[in-house]
Length: 86
Image (cartoon, rainbow, N blue to C red; front, side, top):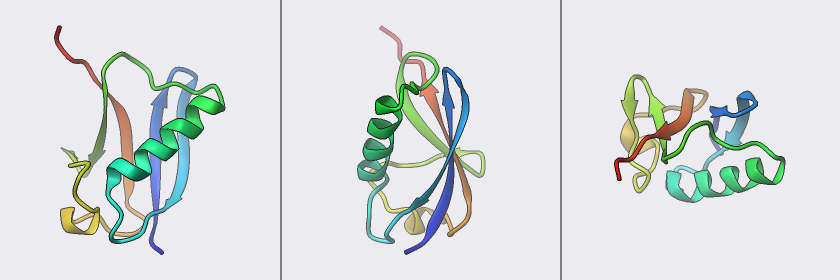
């Protein structure tokens, strides 16, 4: 199973996860599990808004698998929040 490095911009600072993600697994499922684990450990994403995953300078689609978006094993992903209006 491919492994990816994901950095989360949390209130307490940057938190790194090494994550195994199946080639057929969508980012939405994986991210939900990791964010739950972060909250359980007392780490919350910095800012208000929806999570956004950035790779190679672009925002990734949560419903599409990583390989279909060109992301390769061992690539670095960054998760932060995007402010929403309203």
